[in-house]
Length: 258
Image (cartoon, rainbow, N blue to C red):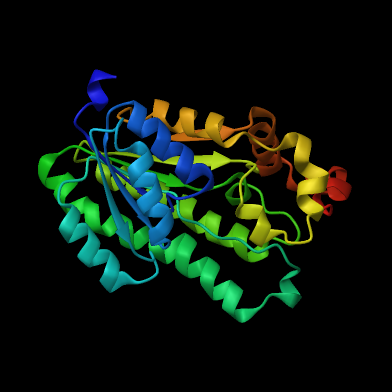
């Protein structure tokens, strides 16, 4: 715990789901917390809730897709020891039925927004020769399945960016970690899967957001390349990389249950 005391941690998409659980654990561990999200009312409520536990809680209303706003926010934040890029959005639909505005939103939030936030902290971390960037990717970035073509593409992009960043930043003593969870029981699916089909079929396999958050916080300040959850799904993606045709044939029925 001592290595985390007095550190400034920035969490995007912090007011619900995984981001909320990350904020709660960071508060208990004594971080100085900076929360970035679009909903000011929720940010204020969370600031009040966590204020008695954390070293401090600062909140900023901003959309990660608004580069100008994000630049202003990070200028106001100042020193950042840990950045967790958690903000994300998804829509599960057939590729030929994808709506242009939803496609754009997924790319803007999941990829461009994440890159924008990384760009804000890299120079200062490089100057100090310390820091940790944690990007929330997905098992979908390891193995794409039907009805998630664009979402999977954005997470593939996150992994590619993170892997390159890890090598570049490693020269300066900066850690870069990719988090690849399977489905998490969060409000994410209220938008991604409004019909409830995926949640109904995958419900028993969904991860607990608090458990995922704890595993993420456990690697803060450590040179961990990736965190993959659950283990069986991570194993499946590794097997798929070796035998894609076989896995897609055997798993066809399961893959089409979205």
